[in-house]
Image (cartoon, rainbow, N blue to C red; front, side, top):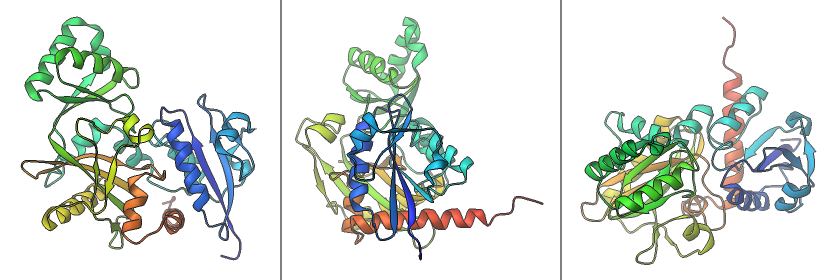
Length: 352
């Protein structure tokens, strides 16, 4: 390229994962190839307003006292890297804005982003593939029904009958384990449902498996050159589970890359991850999370994350690094994939 590409890095957002986004964007900014890219910052405050500041300004300060932005196009971006996690950023809403503005951007498009963000819808979608992609057994709950004591009792009975205890209760459209609880009784289930309903009116309750937490990183456009990493494993001290505090505050998890698994299971997980990536229409990147039953060794797909964490302790960049793609190169590859995908779409006809 004779001229450097103006890269807009977007962070913050109207989401409970606001702080995680700032941490991801801080690492991304440090790794951007400044020989190829001129960096522009766009912070999104919790109230949804936009702001900008000098490229080297601490991102929290951009959010706090940055210059207001009313027109994204006035910033003059050639490419957008939306380092946004959760609702209003990872769920297709921001991607839709960029599509309307005609801007290329890193990551999946509107449909894949929305589909993978909704834990209930994506489970139904993957289970309907041929052959089915195995998913964690679950019950879907309408949070609005919890106010009716009779319906609440019926929901608890359904969970007990179909899943048993322990189980995990999650808002359907959140990430980073925000609003997630482990329930071992009907009383704990009621408390967990109330918490999850604060974040989303749609709730899923998943069977609590005795399992290992295994993740796979995917990089590419879904075609033959798409990279699928070796599986990595998250391990925790006995008695703990991977909630928000243990992910980002206490930092008690250990990451094992590659995971110690039989070769046949490692390959099966890689195949399932790529199938899920292609079926959901993901672009650029995804981290596909699995549970592997400790007794049977059977894998269950748990989630497809279209914009996984990019912090220093995040699994996606660590798995890609183990696959031979260091952090800085990973950022550049994602930008190149975004530009190529946008160029291909621009070549599609819009007239008869």
